[in-house]
Image 1 (tube, rainbow, N blue to C red):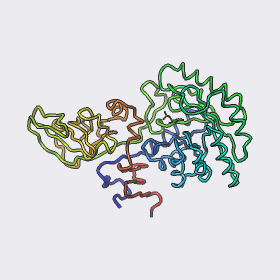
Image 2 (spheres, rainbow, N blue to C red):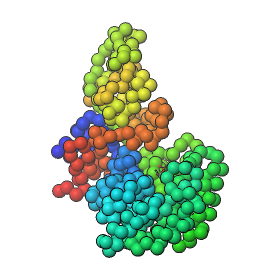
Image 3 (tube, rainbow, N blue to C red):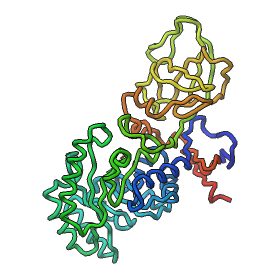
Image 4 (tube, protein in one colour):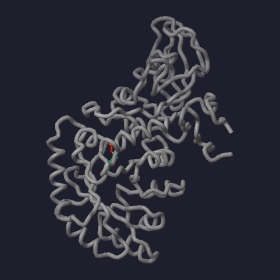
Length: 397
Ligand SMILES: *Cc1c(COP(=O)(O)O)cnc(C)c1O
């Protein structure tokens, strides 16, 4: 066992993602309040809950009032069931017809997009004496997944006739809800309502991602589907910060080696950085295989003693180097913050994303299983998950 429950510092791999479950619970409650009492909340936990750990986030969100979970593929739903999660789970992405069995056996709700899939799920449901809830997605302008508006009513009426299925929901997804100009989003919403109004027997209509909940609460309908906001991050710089979100994830490491360079010495592959004066550098034992984007070479920044230390040279697969010449008293094993706060300093996921030329979503999803997850609640470590062990102190004796 690498860690005792409590407030002791993490003694596993000196690179870890700390997930503040209280922040996630806070975000769920705030989003629910904002969406209104009549609106259910589907917590989007696809991609391992945006890297935050699907099962722990799902449990936390459920305790804070989430009524539904959303995943991208059937396997993610199965993974949650195997972890003992009981909430309804909607698979929001494409399910191949040969995956119907996973849907039925594990009690998932599927988004149906073909008659073939509908028949496959219905057949198995009847065999097993079950009724499987299904949703229909209307493509109102993403031109990605879903059915065209004119295909929806005939398809829904067809599915309605199949025993073993219950059309529970109808939904769409917005292309530019996180931009200041809401014209296209309103257009998509009207298109959606045009279809949904013709199918009043479908009880749950849902269209709102995080940006829509924050900026257009009038579109919350019967259910909302927040993702990024659950994790305490605003979907873009253009949305209203109408509710106070708390970032849940911080990414931390420790100084592995300190050494001094003479002017003219270079760092890392390609010798892309050369010291122009005597410099003190610190090795950080993580790299692009841990989700530290290689494009942050000579660009990224970390916190040590609350101060910013710039990346020097190329980021390697498993390690990189930062300049600490200006930070007095740095020692081996001092904490390094890649995302999060330290002694009054802060590096946000948005800042890292901006530097890497991407969005916070991709930064989070890029944190692989090699990075230990340390889950905290009330300031205590509640559970840890590493490549080699999984300990839940809330159930362990
Ligand atoms: C990912 C996803 C969401 C969540 O979007 P955020 O911008 O993270 O809130 C909602 N709905 C669908 C269909 C999605 O795929």
